[in-house]
Image (cartoon, rainbow, N blue to C red):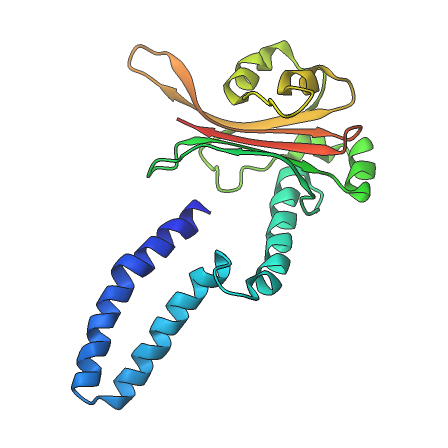
Length: 219
């Protein structure tokens, strides 16, 4: 989404003003073919972000199947099982700076098929996932069963955020039996040799509660 936001900014504040000037000159110079090409180009450039951000009626008809496809592929990369995110139970997004630093958490409902799968996932779930994906320079901690390993407290603390509208916190989910958690992370080494946690994607799946937690924090 951050990449699309940057592309949208470039389209509306750089590309369109430049093309607008060229269109004005083409119209003034009675260059009919160039005028038509520029009008079509500008229309397509406006159409793409307008549909993605659902600024025009009917965008959901196009974007919902696309969103479901992307979610399925992302969840397959994450767990080895393709499924779409269900109803949102909790959502939090902090302001992000230009580099994307900030915090977000999304808790969604799992449908019956996903719940049944995660009650008894195959062994590759624990050995091959999550895959790195675009986080090629991050390290990965594969899926583990809860209760949480004490060695992972540092990562939970870094990923945690209060859940005032719910009757549980992330630490409660991590101490329940029957859940799973995994994370991708990045540590930065300083000149004194210390390594500090700077970025994390943290995930929890709770079949009994039929929920999935997706946290991203970047510093």
